[in-house]
Length: 337
Image 1 (cartoon, rainbow, N blue to C red):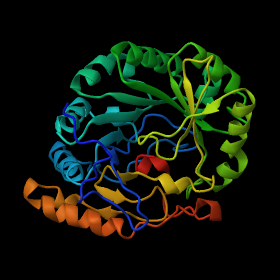
Image 2: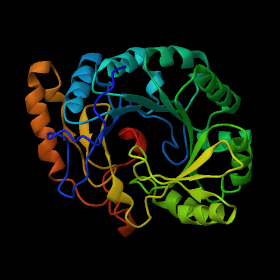
Image 3: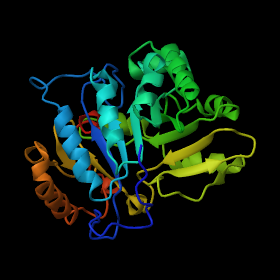
Image 4: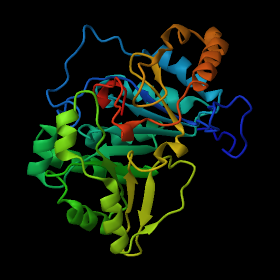
């Protein structure tokens, strides 16, 4: 993989909004299909809306090339479950081969990780986030609808052995479900170099009742960690809105993503493109803008870049979640979380 200029040397054409936020991170969904039925996301499982028309390899290559020319240096491949695509390894290779991209990451439920970690690493994937909402196999099954806890954990071990730069585990905080799991998670990362990230539950269009029943404020976890000697890490350019904490007695770190915290959106550095080619400036508040007509061939690059700059000028300062406005997003799987 090639090394682009450092983030300190800002490309004059780099994507920037009217609030001075610069965007070097693209979350690119390649499918909205998922084989898990997580209660906070797809409780009834994936329900296709007609025949899937997800981004092709050619469209992905042109999309990443366009974003790369306006300062994008990190691409996270998401879903749904991105590894359900039979050409997933080809997608990784296409992104990794772009000379402007220096970090290729993905978010996965981990069910294929054990068999393919080395293959994906060899293709250029360097960072992996695995969703593990509980270390109790019974609770894992209750939340995900799948009895695959042991399989996922073996996948995480395979990723660590494959040599990935960073392996993170994501857990959505759920009151009355996994909120008692913190001691078990802490014990796990005491001798395991995992970045554990607790994500505060966000309300979506389909989840009002679920949100009211299970929302747990991330700030409560933060206070508990501080009481137990965890120290706040100064943010790196890659962190975005995450607050990270380290402890001298632990090999792993903890990150908190608290969308209801004050000034959460101030450090926003990412944009999203859905599996059907729509640009989303935020997880919430808007329907997305179609880019698919401009990623059919490289000759459309200038027009694509112009549309990206035009849309960034309209990005709002905040997601308005704290005001109870969830926007039109029905579930996070539809645009990659």
